[in-house]
Length: 305
Image (cartoon, rainbow, N blue to C red):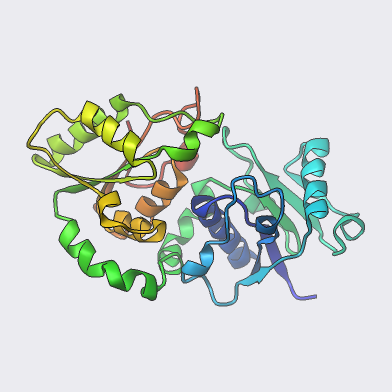
């Protein structure tokens, strides 16, 4: 049996980037292939109607994309997590439940605490089911990820010229997340105070700045910016006016070197993958409701405000 590690993908683009990066670290550690299982996107477990997005990136050519599990088997996996409440389970009965032999199953569902280092106790021919939102799992392979998690050329070639014209040396990329936050009990909208402090931070650093706003909720974003920015001479541009898709916005955001991120894995990854060594990224001090932003989210060049 050829050695591999199986990482179950779920969630939107930001979550999938975390899962791939964690899986890539596993495959390097164990000198084996990475198997990304995309079964969940075709089942009722896909609550937010997400889809597989990593096909738009230059992920490693040996990566296996598979569909190993049906809805009932995925339900069994979720039940196992609730029954055993452990990070790792020796999976002697895997063939009975999943019709395939796996050594162990590793879980990671708790966003709100510093995690057990699963990488240290990991095993081959095992399943990894969770979100893995911790920089310790992949920060040491960031140069590799900068290559493999760059978008395919055919997607970005049409907007490279736009990027050069849109982004100035004093541009600050700002993400205002709306949309699904209204329906997620873990989050609330980022308040005006964070944006005010972040904008003032960049003004003190650079003097005159230009604000380039990325948002999935243009009504909310324009309302919030009108409350925050009182200077009528402040230069403001909205990605929305450029009529881009989300991957094009991901690329355009990434091309900046100054970032005001939201409570969002989308903007976190776009700024994290920026290649500029002098980049500056601000993060809100609270990530989940009543929960401080953990060190597991704070990479080099990131500043909590």
